[in-house]
Length: 395
Image (tube, rainbow, N blue to C red; front, side, top):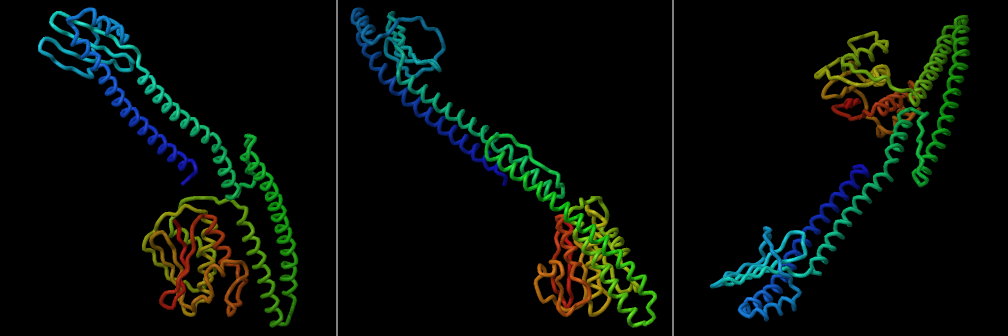
């Protein structure tokens, strides 16, 4: 899960929790204040009602409690209503107001009195404002964190581009903080690596060119040797040198070459891989296609990887034929032979092979591994029923 998603989840959790707490506190305070006000003014209303036949006393009580006579015809929330034999008492309030209306009716006498402002309600309003401010500040903090973390997307994208082979990828961030320091450090590192890679590629191209020239001359001179055994030995040596040079250059080219992706079938991949091999006896390979699925990959490189697996299977099989099995988005190469003495990871390194198998230079599986990793596919090895099974998982 990304940092942005984690922060968003934390913010939403905090926001919802703050809202629930604010609503709960407001509800409790509203009930508490209403009860206090009702009790307070009910006592005043009862006192006025008991003295309603004494006008002077009523006026004295109105003055004592800072009440004001009003004409109120608005619809208000009724906090209390009590009917008496010859009249009634009611206490009302208006939403979002800090005043209350006491209405007392007895026979022909009627009083509608407005109370003074209540500090309790003002305190409740202040509490609600503070809760709202807390939520607002929380939102501002979240937006500020998003702004602080936004350069991470650029940094991640730049690193991904560089790792996928775009060695000119750079990150341009101007924030005067650690993000800018990180991007500058990455750009410096990327420039150094780009120069190093270019130098190494140039060196290998030069080495490959320089090696091919004496190899070609040597193969030409061999033709003039009359001794058959010496001639055959020298031809084998020069062929090995040529093969090793080509394999090393191919292995190094994989580090910097971008893939040319296309969509093709598994059958097309097998046909392309077999076309790169020189097979004198077609009966040495059995092809079993259970599911001819589609693959999005670089046909040239992926067919090279499959070709190397087939070549190894033919080379080290104790009995022919070998089997190519296509099923469930994987292609397996199966041959009868001895189990590998070490874990697969050992053979994926350049110049590693079984001690008993000296044919080749141990580069085939290393090239397969690089091609598979470049495609984000995977390679597996199992030993089943006296057979080695190498599978390309093309998911």
